Image 1 (tube, one colour):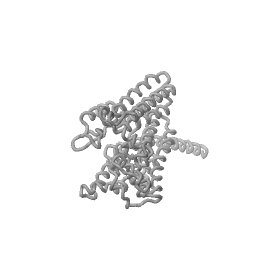
Image 2 (cartoon, helix red, strand yellow):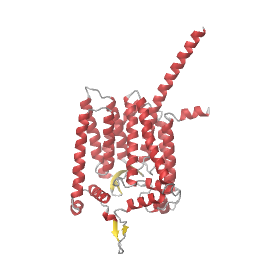
Image 3 (cartoon, helix red, strand yellow):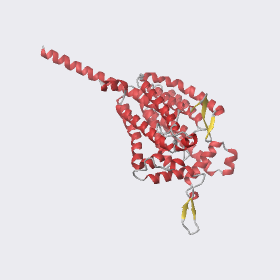
Image 4 (cartoon, helix red, strand yellow):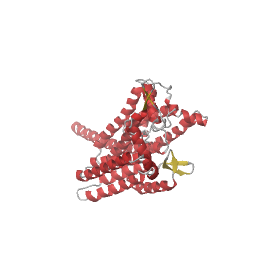
Length: 411
């Protein structure tokens, strides 16, 4: 009876449920440790983790609700695209500036991040139109997708270029999976590569004095990040005795302490004894993977990495079992955006790419991002629940046929 109750309460794929639960547990443990500086400022040891636990609990409730929603109702995400566009425009003029970026919109005592709503809306938008694509309507559907997603990314880019690139990249992969003409996709890819080379080449060659005076603040910030990431010589200095010492400056402060955290962790880590959480400004968000590596070591870091890889692999299996296109693309889109964002966060922590500001999905401390991440899991579970129901119906039909055959033979 207990097993039946759990089966009714937790619908959908059990592997995805296990990954979701594991990430929630990791999040609670790591955020509790990584928010030591916030706890010190607020003079309350439990306040930071309590806030995060409340958002996780809200997200868990959202997952329980969404897992029971028939996948066809997720087409309502189409309405989210214009709403997200309006919110992004409002944020440009009335948004709150946090850490030099105007990405948040104040709603009473709360703040929301419109770009998070834009991401999930775009996934639903692309999945819906790809499910309707046919040889005779491919051209206008492709134009609709490019205009819708491209317009949304243009609105996101001024204050959050990394999110715009992430979203467009995921939608592009979805279009490739959806068998959009390779000629059309190739043209978009070449245009994007040319634009990226032109932008980053211009930023690299432009003198700092000109950049500070004429470029928008966010472009100047990206120029500095690219230069800091590529210029290794500025991070070292020669001592009087001729030895080379590593120089930590304001420019490389976060990356330097992330490297120290990784070095401290070694293979098995320092559970509960990490020190870099007190130095990294975004230890509980952008650089939380560095804290994971410090406190759980290489083994813990690989475990978290494998959770996201397992999610992508499992969602690929589930998508292949979907008979209908819309839930198939919803599963793949949700899994892709979670996995690629996770890989981007990890790559920043180990200094493979410049700082992007992307949180680790479900693990980093957050409000809007945590709830929207839970919504992705709810969508995946809802679509996988339909697959399970179809298989149960098939099994039941087979069982009934066997029973009828047996009954006839007996007679």
